[in-house]
Length: 134
Image 1 (tube, rainbow, N blue to C red):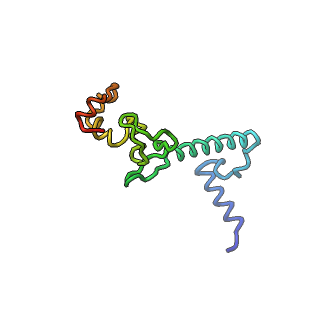
Image 2: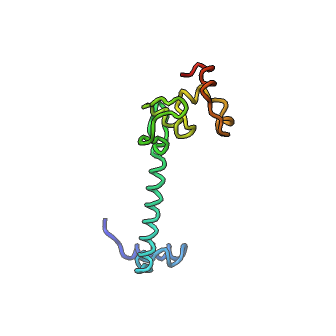
Image 3: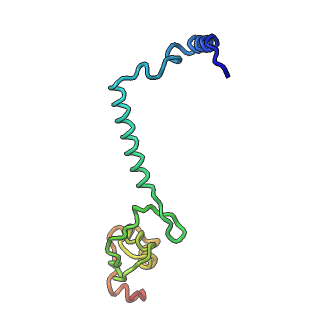
């Protein structure tokens, strides 16, 4: 396909008339070192924000449920402070972080009683024995 300079000029003239002279200018025409530095700074800032969001939103499947990797604390003490059982369950990781107890203790002592648990209540040895918890 051959380029016709007269046709190109006519198209540019029509675009200029409808949208203004800026619409047909070369994009590099108004670009300078200062604008380049500002643009580079904006791109870096955007990339950092994007990476931060990606790290926050990384999800891991645990027993069929997607949980943020941030919630899974694999290096922490994996013993439940309530029953002193050691747990390798990823499911218990979430409860250890959120409620400071394993999943089994959550079901037995916390579930449907979160307000009491969050206020500081913890089962004593007598309470555990009456509930059949070893």
